[in-house]
Length: 161
Image 1 (cartoon, helix red, strand yellow):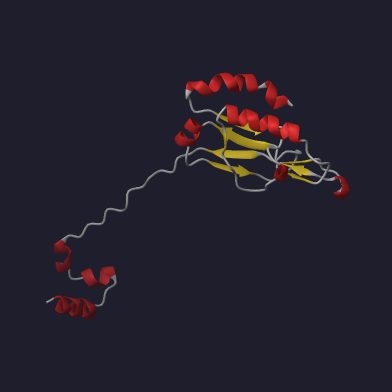
Image 2 (image 1 turned 90 degrees about the vertical axis):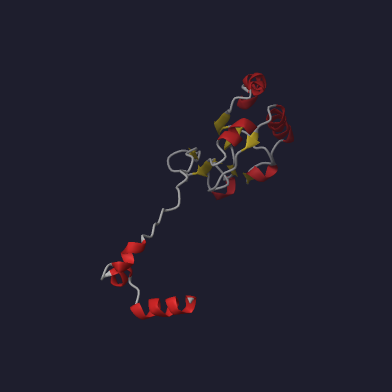
């Protein structure tokens, strides 16, 4: 299992509290629900990846799009799909990029689905700053410009007094 070879790096990096994410083909499923079709999955592989995730305080960032990111591409009877590609991150990364979106794109020319990770922070826009100047009322075309009938204005002014 390839990911366990990189476990040494992960085990040494989680204490730095630097935002870190890991994206790509983990080549293993983390639960039986991440596989459809084919032979039964091996519990030992699932235990190993989950131990690595737990020891390094990693979180699966989640996704939208197709649930399975890999397919063996065989005919119907031999076809199976798995969720092998993902984004894992430490809590510091999840806090720093809390607006991140992960999208599983459709498979086109590969047996793996591409992953789109968008870390752009939405720009907070201030509400429009509308101002009203009292002298505008004195303009002869004021009511026409704002699309209000003069009778409605007169009625509203009378109801205020």
